[in-house]
Image (cartoon, rainbow, N blue to C red):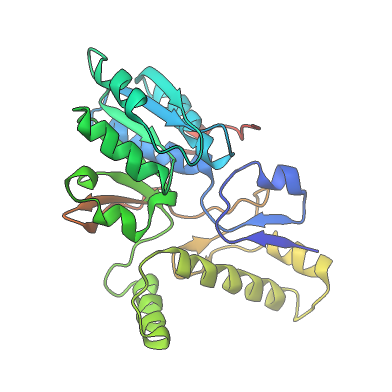
Length: 270
């Protein structure tokens, strides 16, 4: 029976789940490649990563480090933390003591860890560019005030005027009475769209194997967030990655680049 995850992003997911496992979100190694390439293009030459070994997702910075070094950047160090940790003062103190300071700090931590980490870094005088991932695409990130200003993160999409995502958001608000405050609403819609397209491609069949085989051959399915392709993959989709900067508490679109294929690291089993 084919199984699909709305927003799991570990590229190891199909390796663990087998041929009937599919994801619907940009892989961790793909997101990390996009953010590392962006950091390099901005002229950042040194980086520091903070990650948690507690889950596959929170080890995304290891992929970032691989790509950043492949591009000629220097890794100045790394720290680990536990999921749910609230005190990041020791990590912030270690980074603030570095001379020179890193140009970039990359993490894939999310609430409640990320806000605490970010506030600790800024309180310690660390001014490095902070790069996060889709886990912080939430209203909390945009309510952090000065601490959150300038944070850049990868996510699954951004609504520009006339885009499919803007159209989805308008329909979402009309149906629910509330604006969509996160891209994950549209990502869920896209998963249903992908399943529907697979059923159509299987001539309307509800046979699990027929649907699985159709999923594996889908190309350029038009979702609200991106064109989505599974053909030629191992169950992780080929799709856009969006880069967002927090600017005065609002989303600023930096770009929606495709990663350089040869730079994408192989999936890393925890």
